[in-house]
Length: 605
Image 1: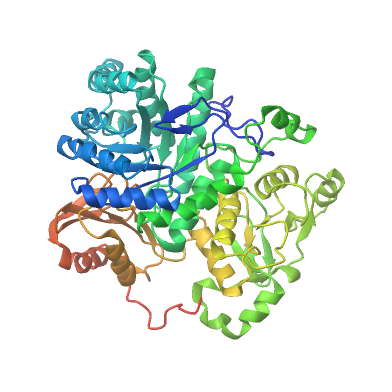
Image 2 (image 1 turned 60 degrees about the vertical axis):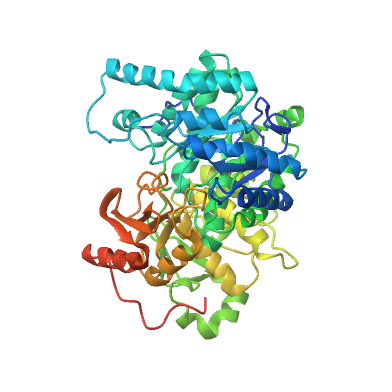
């Protein structure tokens, strides 16, 4: 279901303008308002193990984490937050603590005694998860809301009295029966789920709220956050609550960093986001440098100088009409071209370009690079480079009788994302577009993380809005790495699937097995299954709901026991952990999606 046309999530799609929110104070850390974008993470230790939890909190704070979250599955777990908080403060660390709550209102009330912030998921907080297939009448819907109000109100009143902050954090795929039956598993359903809880809080004059809309699919995540902000704005100016950003179950390694950069970075570029968490299936301290690198360029901007921002609203901005619907994905409809033997545009595969210099460097091994090979040399492509603010140049391209490949000219005085947005809106749709990660080629090498994150943010954001028929990576100068980066961005954006896709949750105190080693074991066994999506979830909380659109799921059911899923349906239960990977392979084989691994892997790329 698309939102009404008047909804808008961003006042200026061509110039950076940070969304100004009210400030909430999490302990001594301010969120929103004029504060910088904050970085947070979550520990992985069992909440009952005080020394382990304290050590992790201190290590995260030392790494630069500004807010730390701890799971509290039950009231017993929540009660030990008293000991954890006491020992953390005794060590001289003032980092605010957050309790992560699913299902249990009594755990939330206990946790709120000891921590500065409570995270609740409105999809499962005191809500039924039977997935009954029926229509709710208005009366039945209101009856359910009243039941939720009675369960939720004690926490609201407690947090209000104690000065605690609350994050209302919706997750895609973990929506209640009530929402699922009325709105489906959609961004609109995610937003409505959060607003229901927000209205209850506001009815009792409680406003220390933060909202989030997490999903493992960057497209869904981006649309949900945009719709959330648009709906908050439509509700009224006093609904200006801070926003927490995160791509849930992003995975590990390069893939997890790219997926996070696409989802989080795209929204930051449009001024949305006051605190972020990068969810990697790695030790939590590894999340911090990634998150800090993501927010750094936006914290460096004068995002809260409203007078300066208003002066940036130019004639170009006022006349700008985007070529895409920001709330619903649809690929831009360009015409077909054939370049160096490859079809592009008109719905064809998004192609990977490289420079002549990099092509030459890879020439001796292109035949062995498998799915990571370069396809088209930019200098031989006939691409037309134009400054989209140059009306004469735009008119000249549009006057051409035949479609041509176009891109933004180097040196154009705009950021990458708005420059390509403007190009897509001004040139005829028949002209395919070549996306670039940078508009100025770096003159010296930069570290891979600082090449990866802007490339994923810039190109991934545009791909998620349906813009782009080919991509060119130039911020990463190493030829092989630039190819791998290009293909991995296409994969993470869901644009060109060429390898197995993994949805792996970050470990936490609920996890029932070693997520890092298990994910690597599953990846080693299934990494050749092109186009198959496998979810690896540490517990039932991040199980069938959070897997969203995975083909198969590997979920912790009990200590040492694994449940296997096909889609969201559990099909095999209580499998011993040492047998579970083989049983997963058997399940994939049963459903006709297993092939034997090729003798020669694409290791060179």
